[in-house]
Image (tube, rainbow, N blue to C red; front, side, top):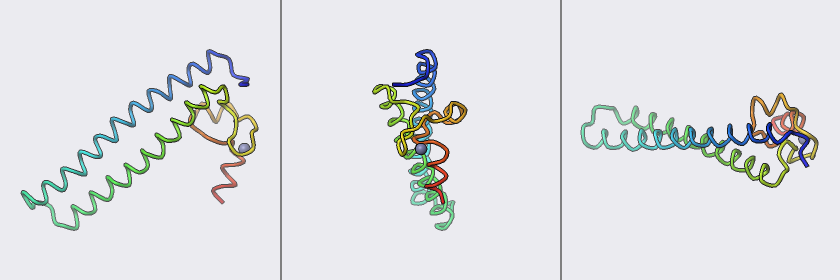
Length: 118
Ligand SMILES: [Zn+2]
């Protein structure tokens, strides 16, 4: 059971849902950008092959980042549905509210994340 008030939980849900919308839009833009690069390359040839490849790989790496964030947001929303939001996936402790304020999709507490990044 979450210690957060239902008002707080609603706010987090709203933030997560709107972040998801934004990311989906961004993802479509990146995808369009990556496709455009390819078209320009074959039709116009304004960009050198290297430039086109570089632009495309940048767009692809942005798309991968967006996919990762979308996945985390989806998981955070599942946790909200299961009344499990605000708890660390790793150790089960509460995630600090300050951390959730900054990053509502954070799957684990600061200590566990630091451990994973080492
Ligand atoms: Zn933890």
